[in-house]
Length: 192
Image (cartoon, rainbow, N blue to C red):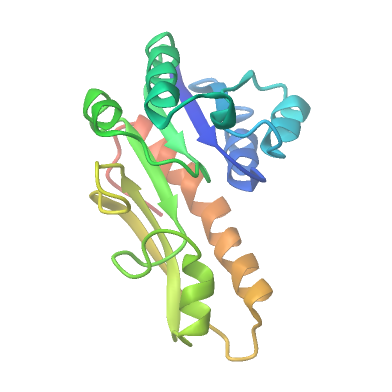
């Protein structure tokens, strides 16, 4: 049985898509959600899906280092094959990334290296990009720079508003992120 831990900070639509994808799997289990935000809606999704969760509220720590050290200790207590970032809005420190080298993946709502960081969909929209998309990549110490596992391109319809573009990006994320996770865990190099 392959085990996944998911880190998320917000609404949790990618978390839910991943959980539903693997809900009938006998080969893969989501063992825990960790969130840094006690008000994140992803907690309600975890409750509804029966997924174990832990709130490590960032605001309750005196410093970023104290938070990261505590998170690291909690992660070391877990036995998992893959750490999946799904809207996790903290930058993992280098010592966590190095410890779990090639075991942490992230999804980003742009065609990296374009629009790394925050508000990527909005920036692509405001720049009237003809194409944007998603990137699933390994996590490295620098933000949104890790080895790319999969990119999917989306042609932007001129009639779309920002909300519609976000909706279309989320559809791609929900379709491809679970597939990539499954392929990584089964050591497959083919992505459909």
